[in-house]
Length: 107
Image 1 (cartoon, rainbow, N blue to C red):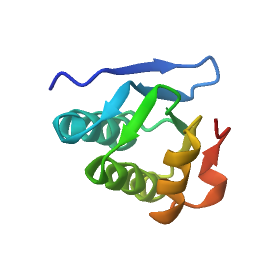
Image 2: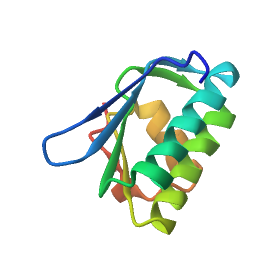
Image 3: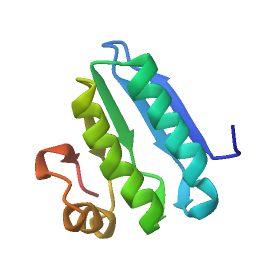
Image 4: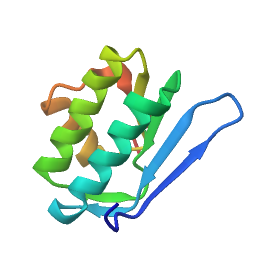
């Protein structure tokens, strides 16, 4: 896997929490995508939370990856939520068509 700074943990209720760090640019895209696909298609938790609290910037490639993760989760019956985005990132997600109920706790 590439050197993407992503922490993956499982909460006591079985929710898989993925927390990417800092700036999500083109160099981090492959690692983030692989982590999300592995989680949704193979691990298949009931809920997957992408904790965006540490994400300072989101490029268009990774924005598309997060949107696609929501759709892939729907296909595999995994509820995907995007938690703690900054107001700017929450705006990007909304503009990209992510439903409002998936974006929680906007910072």
